[in-house]
Image 1 (cartoon, rainbow, N blue to C red):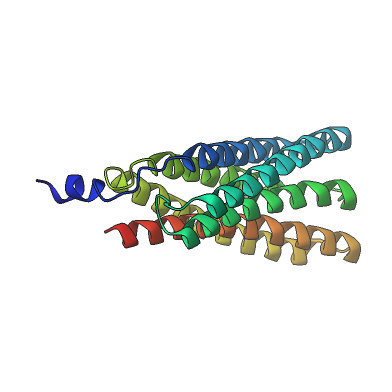
Image 2 (cartoon, rainbow, N blue to C red):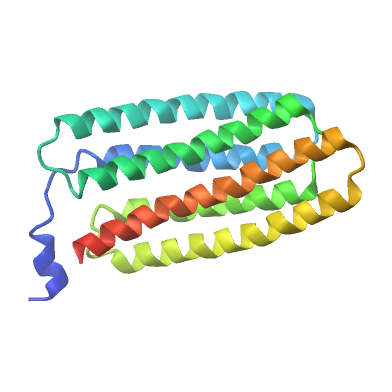
Length: 216
């Protein structure tokens, strides 16, 4: 018997967590789509509208997080380590919090210009979220889908490296061209949050890779 098929017999059959994981990551993708739209617009009215939508999605994410923790507390058998379920849920929540924080600061700070690099970073956040979604979907059968999960995780790592390059280019451009100290501080903070958001997506994939290692 193939070793992968053999190992599947030892994976607990409690699938109550998977709908929660799916809902959580779908919520994340939706928030990243709205962030991309927000940072592609210069209309402050649109910024406010989109921020409110993102805030609502973040609240939905909080509810999903709480439901996952409740399920974890009452489950005797879990599909993989309890610590990994907790960490995976917390990491997805961190990304959502960051997306919400970026949108909120755009509305609060009202930078005079929306840097073109914001849109590039938002696109990477979205691409990272889609890869996380792919990997989470494959968790239903991690042994059979380990190749797909590893591929998605690798793409997120590449996205994170690209985000670092864009971030440092943006910071260099900002300090070279921006003469207004207030605008410099505003834009610097927003760029930091965008870069951190992609880092947090990589944190999600690090947890997924840990799950695969433990199941190997």
